[in-house]
Amino acid sequence: MGSQKKQKEKRKDFVKPKLKVGKTKPKATSYTELGFRAKAIGIPEQSITKTHTSRETFDHYLSLARHHSHSTRREALAYLQAHLPEEVDSSLFTSISPLILDPTPTVRAAVLSLVRAIPTSSLAPHVHLISLYIHSGMTHLAPDIRADSSKFLLFVLKAEDADIPMQLVTRSWEKTLHCFGSLLGWDLASPPPPGSSIPAGSGNWNKVGNATSIDRIANAPGHLDALSLFLRLGLSENLTPEMQAQREVPVYHADTTKHLIPRNATTPYARLGLFVEDKGRRWTAVSSTEDIGARYQLLKGMLPGILAGLDSGRRQGGEIGRKCKYLIDFLDKAKSETEKLQ
Image (cartoon, rainbow, N blue to C red):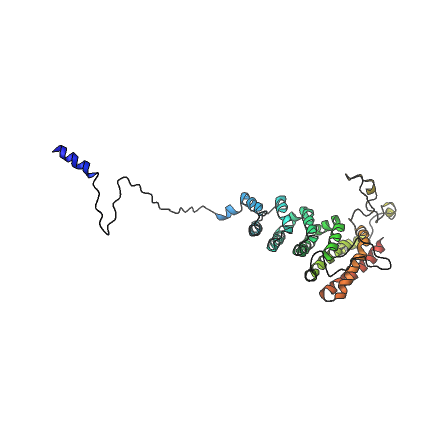
């Protein structure tokens, strides 16, 4: 009896089950369940704001400003603008300043929007770095980058802190004027031909670098606005009534002026090269542009080319003509006032 029961149990392991239509196939005894169900975990203390304002996340998006994709660069700049810290360090300016020359217009627009959102106190120490890329944009081969360079320049010149535009005026006066000559197609270095006051190549409003005349005419008003503001800041003193009253009432000894260095010699010992590494550099009496007289001395050599270009633009009429006429009148007035001071 017992042996028959054991044999029946052994045969049961080898019996093939009969499958019926519409019935689920029975699972093997060695079957392993592989299914799973996901459940969400809610954390009430979790905060998205804390994550976004962390320094690690900000630095991550700062690195994305150099990404190869222009859409990623644009989105990174938008994030940086939305999460600007109260005190901006130099790493931000080092990352975004090269984007002034970005080939994508939307990225350049995002950079301009970002620098406008930066506090003035944080912007002042980095004007020199920004101006380097602005000058590079003014002489760039791409017409659209040259066109946008004036927008960045106007932003610096219109800054609320007066020290910011004056840094550009005093430190980069000559360089900026030469960049304007390249931007507007004026030859500021060539001497005027015999019997003419117009330098060779000046006043060429038909072509600027490799840009067509259509591109130049469309962007000329913005360039002239930047040039006008730059010249007004450099050649006007903008004295307040209190400063003017102090100037009219001298508070020093009457013979003090006899012992002062002349106004037109702002750096009388610069020719000795005591404070430069390059001893072979040629210095002039107007190497410094800290005052109006010195800036006008540098402008005087470029004035024929500037006036020739402005006169050519004035003859075109319209908005360009009005702006050129205003600049011509301003330069004539600045010339007379500066010569009175010297």
